[in-house]
Amino acid sequence: MAVPATPLARALADHTLVLDGGLSNQLAAQGCDLSGELWSARLLSDDPGQIEQAHTAYVRAGAQVLITAGYQATFEGFARRGLDREAAAALLRTSVELARRAARPAAREVWVAASVGPYGAMLADGSEYRGRYGLSEGELERFHRPRIEVLAGAGPDVLALETVPDAVEGRALLRAVDGCGVPVWLSYSCAGEYTRAGQPLAEAFAPAAGNDQVIAVGVNCCDPRDADRAVEIAARVTGKPVVVYPNSGEGWDARAGDWRGGATFDPARVSVWRAAGARLIGGCCRVGPELIGELAALLEDDLENH
Image 1 (cartoon, helix red, strand yellow):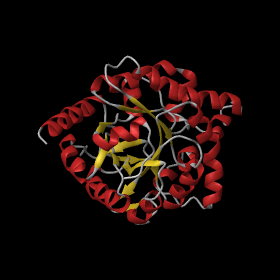
Image 2: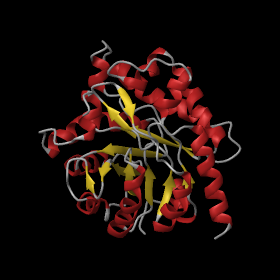
Image 3: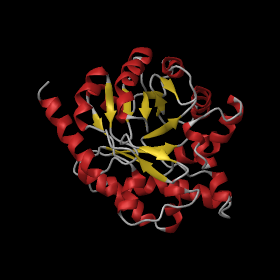
């Protein structure tokens, strides 16, 4: 398994690490207003202490990797709020520093993953769950590269190329991170064995197989029931450690602006995912510190029993 000789990559060779859960649901639990196109990224300027508090809640729950509040943080999105590029870049760097501050007091090693959300997150119209933006691979690369350069310069342990709905955007992101000097993971949002845009996951994962900058591949913000097969496909196609952090299983009703259905996230699936090759395991939307705490305890038990 050829991976960069970074501390996090070396850790994945021997350990399974617990990711945090959904940042937005924890911020909402803290009483934050997440309305508006910037979602949780708005708090980077308006109330950064709340973001650090949310990260700290996951550290206390047992998370070993914190994903920053950069998912919906883009130059274009901040420009719509009247921020110039210098101010926007400062907020991107702040997203990394807030997670780093929350990680420092922990008695164990806690890693920081700088979130790089998809193009559709900037549009704030649900496109990240559809893909097929009508843009070329080159256009998507040019969109992502400036933000990636700023985030890489902020010194995260890894860039989380996450919730990617489209194999075209996955390839563009891998081009955009080339030469940035930071390892990455590539994580698709999926439906069954397909990306949200309808490409087979095996096809979407394939470009990462020979890329030494990619230290993990997998899925996130998907139905937990789709994660089992996705983990198997990612491990088989790439031979790399797998990252998996599904949402609660509830469905987002964009028209009503609310979640529908019951939660199906089951921390007990950790042993299945780990056996299939997962080495970074956590939760996404609507998966909070309590569930991450259960997952961390189960993972510790699973490791002790094997």
